[in-house]
Length: 169
Length: 266
Image (cartoon, each protein chain N blue to C red):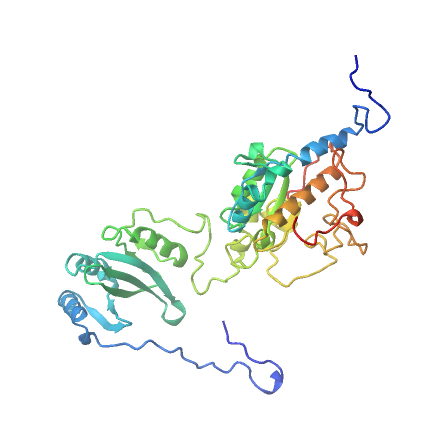
């Protein structure tokens, strides 16, 4: 016997939520963006601070993973040298689809102040980037905002995109 | 960096006129003034050819023949108690005299004195390794080889230490361009994608002041962001909205006009 009167058509009484498969799948994806730890320079300090208790990335479902196989977001935090470029590409290729990249800070965006022979002038020469995050270094709030923008972008996308080969960069 | 000078009315005067300016030198003192150093120098002179010796900022500088470098350093360590090779590298004088200046910065912890041994080698000559006398020379010599291209004989593992193994050129030579030569500028593209991919990726943008708001592949105009490669738009985008229209279920949309700003902390 029902203990409570359930008014199905009022006050959200119906224990059913209607949505589309796209929306719920992308909602799930966007709220569990597991990031690959990719600290390369001083931006890594801000990235670690975003993961720690004060800023707490876990609120967004973003947990740092040390393996590219378990990650679907790569936050490139710091200066990418030419010596390291092949490894970032290899790690990006090892991540499973779907995958996204945030380029964090001036050095990752454009090479920043390192206008020299040994620095890659922007990680987008190596891997495709979804969000460019300006700053030197960006504060943790800025990185959180970037993750929120990425979540928004993911929710807009269709969940069942035909896996077309991504442009390399 | 060149000193800044006013450039208005440039037509009437040369704005760069310190062409014959000579950098001030640190004064060189005679070695006889210092008792410890003069004894050391006597000991060295009795065995080796000393080309020049003086004291600068309380440190003795000794010029030797490059072929004596190992014998001199052994003598300094065993007889004169210079027990520490704190630094060594090369200086590029190729443009001036087609030679490298090799320096060894020594420290004696018992005498509390520092001494610098210097010698010259030609560009295509090699220097003998001092790694078996001072272990600290191992990486220093590798770095010297990597950055300057100075070959070191009898080094146990002469391999590039900073740059990747397949790097071309030696970056700390004065003739090496700061932005890298062609191999350096395309290094990562050539290595990862192959040379055919150069056209697709394009050359590096080395101009820090480059701004083109029509170019949506490299720029997002603030408040007018569009997707990668799409046409630039004049319509303002309000990216401050966290939630898109329609929203996500269970998550309420923040309405700006209904939100309040607290005057003080509750």
